[in-house]
Image (cartoon, rainbow, N blue to C red; front, side, top):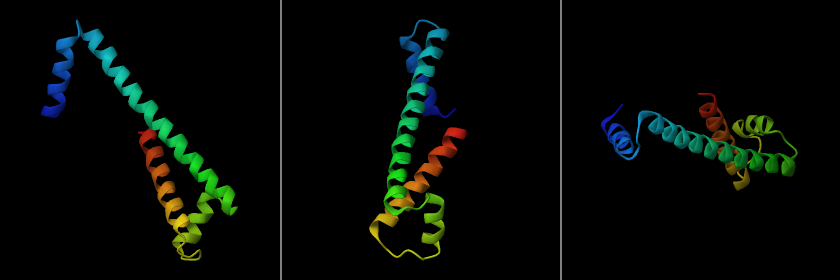
Length: 96
């Protein structure tokens, strides 16, 4: 654990009465962060669905065509590609 994290955990321990309370508090913080990540992933996934409906393409098919240069340079395509990358990254984090 690095010094900055250790210092913050020590600070939390100063305000909690015992190790069990500290662990429960840290678990709640972690759960909050995980819930926030799930919410973000859900919002990004919904944006992907919107693009898929608008262009009648799956994201996988879109990315294959976009990467091959077959779709052009519409700004929507760059946004769609970026969101797809963010969803993939968020999904990898969720699996970790």
